[in-house]
Length: 213
Image (cartoon, rainbow, N blue to C red):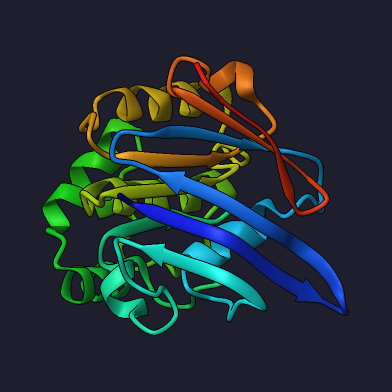
């Protein structure tokens, strides 16, 4: 079991953002997580990542409390945010940090980047925050895929990619291990319909639909 959530609740300003949610995520689940803005999608993902202390219920990720055992949990997860963080490190410094902290081969990152036509070696001295939006997103995707995590979480991962970049990204995802679980926060089900086997729709902090495809 990857994720087990029982009656999970989270409040902001006395309003439920997660309203007593039940969810189970197994090895090999490929989920499209959908819903309007404010539905609770990002909050649910952040709870899985151990960023929030819950106001009710219980969350287990790989059998552990994601807040109390956050380091152990995050070792098995790769997360791509919708907005790349304003990292001031150069590409070379970032790759050195990622390689040492996550035990990822830099060569594997270079290879994944090349498959999306991102030439990292020609940009090693550039600060990450000065890259174009598309280049940032491709680099974060290359790092995530190189980590070989058991759970990949993507928050609108193709938002900054052009059509060719999107197709290259989806091709990479078609080649990952079938046992790997994925969550895509997306408004574009048509683009990822061939990559998912389950759709979850949220509204007002609740899961209102959860269907296998």
